[in-house]
Image 1 (cartoon, rainbow, N blue to C red):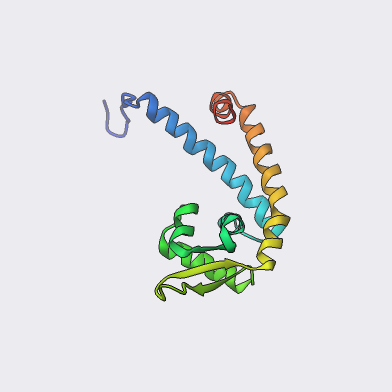
Image 2: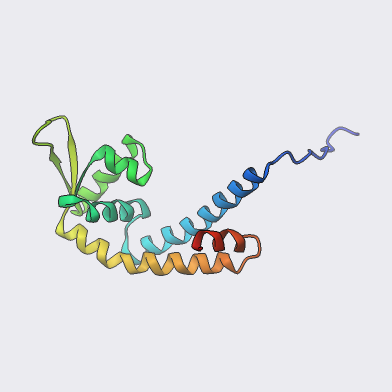
Length: 149
């Protein structure tokens, strides 16, 4: 073989590798559509919307910062920046834990509840449309059927 000619690699992927690749690709496809819709229609990021959803469902509308991070899949640093953005726009506020002054909570405000309620239909419609579009693609159809199953 001459230099510069690539030799084909044997495909060593397992069925799990192939399945997971499909999940990751489908996830990216859907997330991109959700991100654009939330930003375009409501001026908030997808992570901000998800944080507002988790807070709106939490007891007293509040969660410890680490709980919120775990629920939306962010690390502590990322959730701190996210909460700072939400605070700047008046959608949340911070509160100290009355029993443990080291514990910091983020609390959804009335404005945050209103923003979450306003954006929720966009999220639901965009999610359904993205999954419908993916279901029409033969590469994704079985995966979407399983997820919706």
